Length: 287
Ligand SMILES: Nc1nc2c(ncn2[C@@H]2O[C@H](COP(=O)(O)OP(=O)(O)OP(=O)(O)O)[C@@H](O)[C@H]2O)c(=O)[nH]1
Ligand SMILES: [Mg+2]
Ligand SMILES: [Zn+2]
Image 1 (cartoon, rainbow, N blue to C red):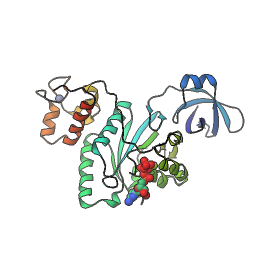
Image 2 (image 1 turned 135 degrees about the horizontal axis):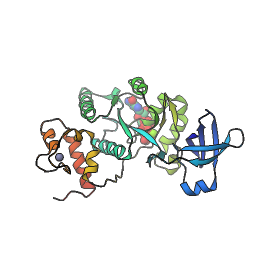
Image 3 (image 1 turned 135 degrees about the vertical axis):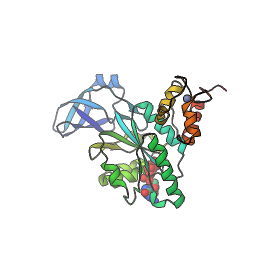
């Protein structure tokens, strides 16, 4: 078996369990069945020539991220900045929901702390409390100076992680600071982040015990949520409170523990507002 760590012109590069890298071909049947192989796929392979192999099978995917296309994603680093650009908290919460409904872990990375004012540092403390209550690790770093990067990278992780976040927040800089030899690939991504050419160029880089991929910045995000309960489950801090009705949507229902927790200041009201507006986007609220 092996892991697809790169794709150039539809030729996957696979790191096999024996530690060797192979440039691979796909068998016709697999190509048809699968549509397209993705970075992050676990594959079976048969060596043909030195350094070359044929992919014989592709393991069922645990999940997939569409932009960039990566299979079997363990977690997302959601990179966020307070200034340059000024971050959108609703989009951050939407990315967290996407992680939850896709079965991916999520960690928040506040970058460009070197630019933070007193007020900015205060906001970071408040976000740290809010997201800590929801169970998300929150790291404060400067990917340019490297401040805070080591403790973040040293936290135990496995599997495949993807850097996501708006354009300009410093995802590629973070990757380049972490892995200097990634700079070339990163440059390609940064410059043409919106082109389809670059999304195909996604590569996995080894960091400690996990793999890391860069992503182009984007802001549009489609969520497919079945109903209010599905969405509510994607806000982990809501589940700590008890509601009178098991199918409570936490809107106006009597005996709603979530509404009480907001009143008491135990759930962040922005998080709640974003929950309501995501419900509205799904067209699930009737007033
Ligand atoms: N002051 C400061 N600037 C930073 C930091 N990290 C990145 N930058 C700058 O922010 C700009 C954008 O950085 P990128 O790494 O290209 O951002 P990105 O998230 O990859 O952007 P896209 O590829 O467009 O999605 C660059 O000019 C970086 O030099 C930081 O920690 N502090
Ligand atoms: Mg970039
Ligand atoms: Zn409720």
